[in-house]
Length: 276
Image (cartoon, rainbow, N blue to C red; front, side):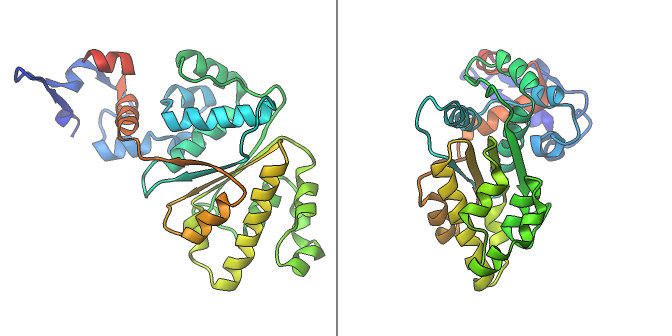
């Protein structure tokens, strides 16, 4: 339970963290695992106002890195790779990171207030709106990946374009038609799980479509493609990084501890945590 969260000092003194920091009211009656899971970004991003959600979001090193890549890419100040590959095992924080990125990019006002609280977050929202399309392929499965792409961009009719039957997947020209030169970030969560369920023919078609997306992300500065994977499918990973990618491996144990403490206790910050 919560009372097992302790720190033992060299002189033998044992401090119970919950004696120093107050448990958040909305989770004080729940079990440890339930509280951590239910207060995570992926569980609350769709249910809470952006400002409320961001008030419960801790800026992990990986989240800070993703935001900096996106800002640099869209600001045109420097060259930055247009594909971001997020790798971790089950429960490693992939969906957390994606939900937080979506909320920050889709709500500039709330994001600005959030960054004021965290000096390590050097992120300035792009001057013009960014269209963020997020699809969790386990929660909202699709027949083919391009269904998520065209539906998210409001171009469902393009799914019936004859060129798809000809090539076996949408080509670059059709995807550019859907993007219409808008600043767009297309995010596929749980991609590896989704791809692993299909036969070789369907798998091949969708791998070819991923090749189209990574190529577009390399060539078009106003388009970024983000995918999360477990890291077990080597062919998939190789396809995603083929044109160059920023790779994030979510294995920072210290970050994971900070996230849990921040979600559980009111008033916990890195500074106050160090003082304890």
